[in-house]
Length: 378
Image (cartoon, rainbow, N blue to C red; front, side):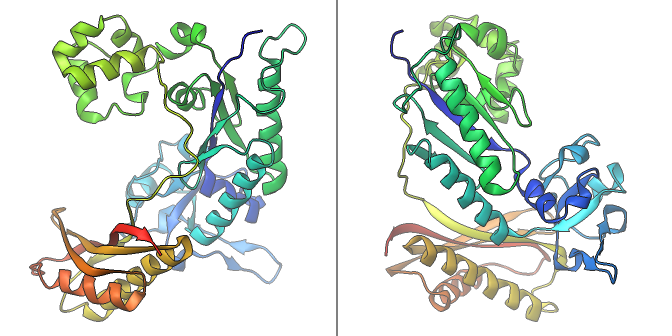
């Protein structure tokens, strides 16, 4: 059998929520939403059980970080306001986010994959690309299945992730390239394994909405729809020249390649971050004067978190910036480039404070963020 390139995209299933269900298995049959604050921490009861907060009792401005599939069945999804989610699923359990625990399980699942396939591109806390082409057995047929070897390898990776993390599931797409694998990993969620070749594109990929392609954003999707191009197959039905006429040489050519499953990108094992940031949306809008103490505490905590992220990953930032969103949803950013890159909380706090002085704080604040950019290795 000829050598084939095989790339996998692994996406953990409802990652944060699934981690919480490991901690509170009694909630497995319930709709659960992650996104609450510390006041929504489950309360231990004398009999060893827990009292959980419910969405119906939530009041505030927070948003859903993620939700279990049971909650998604009610129309609750990431980024939705918690008050809106409460209207759709009032009986859902509300849990606070615990990023330290999520990062711990992220390291566990990536280590489990690396035991079997070491060439990994990290795409965030809950997803990775994996180069499988040269892993022993990946090019072998099994019985009458010409792709049985790589299929068995992907299943072994899934089993190792479940075993190492104590029961977390993932979905894997295995195809000849990264773009197709990203699409394939979504086809049979949750807990799915999907293997596609280029021959499968017309049946499995072309019926999907154009917006499913990573790189087709809302504006491009609107333009495509105006031209009658609703699905990936609609794009593929047009010649490259026509797409170039409509969208320009670069993007038109890219659309043509994307619709036909063409992607030569390598799995990149090392990538340098552009910036590191932390932000928070307040439970209620805060005033710069009347809520100065609370704002100062949050501002300092964000600077400390950014400093911790930089130090943990071995970076310093030369450009320190802030992000503010006011009660009218207007967003303002300011930044300051320093003579020397920094990674300590005090220096970040000082530079961010100087940025803050350049903003008119007459309106109430809805969101506050701190960012370190122009990163260099410490």
